Image 1 (cartoon, helix red, strand yellow):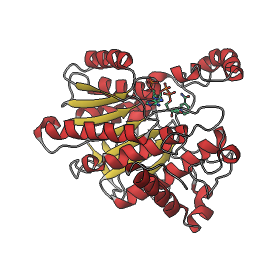
Image 2 (cartoon, rainbow, N blue to C red; image 1 turned 180 degrees about the vertical axis):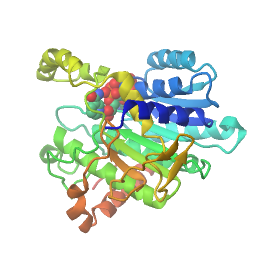
Image 3 (cartoon, protein in one colour; image 1 turned 45 degrees about the vertical axis):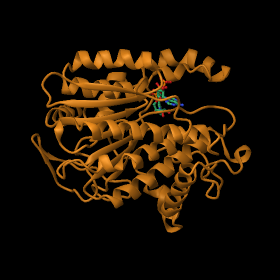
Image 4 (tube, helix red, strand yellow; image 1 turned 90 degrees about the vertical axis):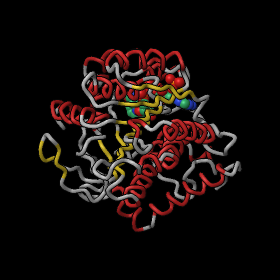
Amino acid sequence: MVQLSVVESANLTFAQSRPLVAVFVGATSGIGEYALLALARAHSKTGKGIRVYLVGRSAASAKNIIAECQHLCPSGDFRFVQVDTLNLLQGTDDCCKHITKMETAEPFGGGEPRIDMLCMTQGFVRFGAAEITSEGLEVSMTLLYYSRMRFTTNLLPLLLATPTSHPAHVLSVFGAGLEKGANLHLDDLSLTKDPKAHYGFLNLRVHVVHMTTMFFEHLAQQHPGKLSLVHVYPGLVLTPAMKHPSYPWWFKAIAFVMLPIAKRTIAIDPEEIGKRVLFLATPRYPARGVENVRTSGGQVAVAVGSDGTSGGGAYSCNWDGETNDIEKFYVKLREQGFGNKVVEHTDKVFEMVGRGERFEE
Ligand SMILES: NC(=O)c1ccc[n+]([C@@H]2O[C@H](COP(=O)([O-])OP(=O)(O)OC[C@H]3O[C@@H](n4cnc5c(N)ncnc54)[C@H](OP(=O)(O)O)[C@@H]3O)[C@@H](O)[C@H]2O)c1
């Protein structure tokens, strides 16, 4: 486990040493909110300036969170970008266009328009049957995988515009390391060809986790020295998601009994997880090809990438900042060209939906 004092010190260096532009998607609640507050707190009154685009549905929640951020960090420029829903990739595309337009019209700090950090926590795991959207995609797969990869690729021009000495950081909070529990359906990556047979809570998780690992590795390889991408399992965090009205009665009953116990035992404190998510944007997780990182705090031990390479650029992390030992899950898949299959599939989804067509395998 990375000690909390190490996390806090690295976060301070990250938030204080240079002006930052960050995009938080899904931070109107829960872990995204905690990570945003951690950034505002680390920057506080003494950082070099910060601009945050907070993407979400609820204007009321955003207003309260921004007020708290502004209190912690009075000089910060916190902007709410409202979306109707990210269930459709069209919503993601519109949102990215809006952010790109705002940042380009008035680049933060007056230099090149850029984004230093993109943190994504949108969506949650729904129980029950698959729900297919008008774009031909499953709703949870869209929120947990496609919209996150789409935010990343749409915002790439701004993410790649950070100064050479500072790669941009992309963070996705979901289930890194949880590759086990169900079979991958290699001929139905989207889980829409035969949702009755293929879709379920565990299949969804296993598909999202494998596909995120592969797509992040692809982007890290395409942009060495420029882009660090981390997906993370946050452990159990008692966020509003635990009491989501859509959950079935049996989940609510278990939650009613277990959550008070979990709160005293295994649950991770919201403020701590906020700091730990922010930490994933620090030099311990560098862009590919950057092996020795020196900061004002000294030499940083670089994490091992999901492909087993030190400083591989794409990382699968546990909540405590350690990388997951996942290579064994991918040996056979890599031999079968699984990475290319995921990238081709994702590109095909983006092309079809981008043309206004309904996706079909
Ligand atoms: N909490 C945990 O213990 C835990 C454990 C493992 C993994 N995770 C994963 O971590 C991520 C964050 O979890 P959390 O507990 O922080 O959840 P949360 O409190 O429910 O936050 C989820 C965020 O996603 C947004 N969102 C949901 N559906 C959306 C939609 N259709 N369009 C746009 N935005 C949408 C929510 O916006 P609204 O405020 O508008 O609803 C909210 O801001 C999720 O992917 C979750 O699966 C959490």
